[in-house]
Length: 234
Length: 234
Image (cartoon, rainbow over all chains, first blue to last red; front, side, top):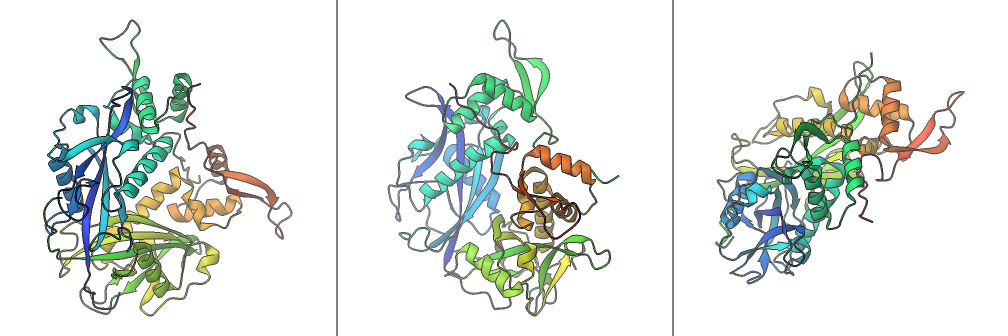
């Protein structure tokens, strides 16, 4: 930290993994999808890549992520967070220069997804059916993001980000099923979610539906059973 | 992502927040500390800064973090992970050029800390008594890291990283007290930790200590009560 700054030969990029839940074309089941951009230039011409690109001098990191999302999909998801920085020297040996990528991920609510407008060369794919090999090391980044999301739904309320403020437990279960890509037992799911303390009953029920409309829940405040309530010494 | 890469005018740096638990010089209580480096050049000459520096062309990100830690403190902590990338355009208006910093944090076990050898211009400080204002926006980064650690100990077993593989509950409580900077009620702490399922009894007891030596615990495998055990549909 005391040397003069070196001249760096690398490009800093911001990339985005945008997750949304859409029906699978074969089964009709809600599935986890993401958009990719087909590259029209070298390197990796004609391969699919995550939306993003080199960071502009005048852009904040999060702003670069939001711009890439808006430009490719028309989306401005509320749930956007930094995921990880990928910067190994040999992460993409076929690229002409070293790229360090700071990756953001977004979770898109269904009412937000209704406003998606794909730009040219953009297409959405179920996450387990991406048309690889992707450009750069984006296969690895997609795998990392999917694995992280699948892990995170089991120990945090992140699945709520796909839903509106109030939701039925069956809707929440369908989010979990889509993310995890497998069917869950409804009564076990209900019991586990309720014992976890991450949702609370709003006292209201869905309207305009069945004979016995389902209860509506919302995210519980942080004081859930996830947390250790540290009690001070008396 | 279809334009030619711009010429970027920014420096990519890797910085480290190295947390260790040491006695407070006034109270003797175990406290959370971190090392800082006094800058001997402009910008921010004579101010304290986090260990780190510009990323070299030939360095991986994690390698840069490990090198900075070893060079400043002699430490090579096992628990090292990426924390966050700080890259707002105006994050450090007094610096001569834009810096994007990828920050790693390390948690040092006491047996690891025994090997600390501070380089010249390096000094450790209790995290709530750092000699600010620090160089760049490092006050903000320190605050972010401390807040994140204090939050994370309440919903994850990260506190175990400060301890050897087997530990008494009183040792774990002292880690929580040091991180949170307040005294905790021993019996409440014991009850909460045990109900959380993040530790398991080894069946062994500490040796060479008291008349009734305390039980030794270890980190429980991931199947703790933190996790939602997603049961498949039958």
